[in-house]
Length: 119
Image (cartoon, rainbow, N blue to C red; front, top):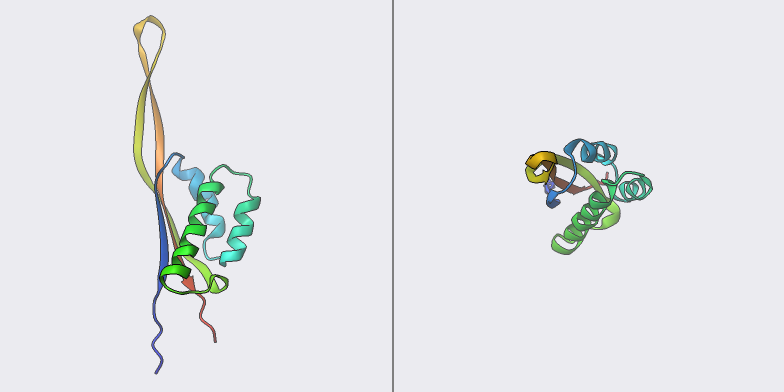
């Protein structure tokens, strides 16, 4: 009996300065797709969130080929997560000596790549 090895390559980006909802809108489009198809989708998407995710997919594929010896053609995105990160707070000066709080949200993005099973 042949054992199926559950090998996953992953890449993690922390404290990306964008909203979780904006990043999830892009991640939902590529989840479950093949590596090459995900790259084409991300390059043609008009959203600002697609560039850091594109870099992360490249990084996960490089991890898979270098660390595990997997072929990039056979990879697909098995799991993709976007979680909320810390909130950066800044004060902006306003009229009459008051200040206004500016909140910059961040997010953490994880991408897992697996090899397709050949039948």
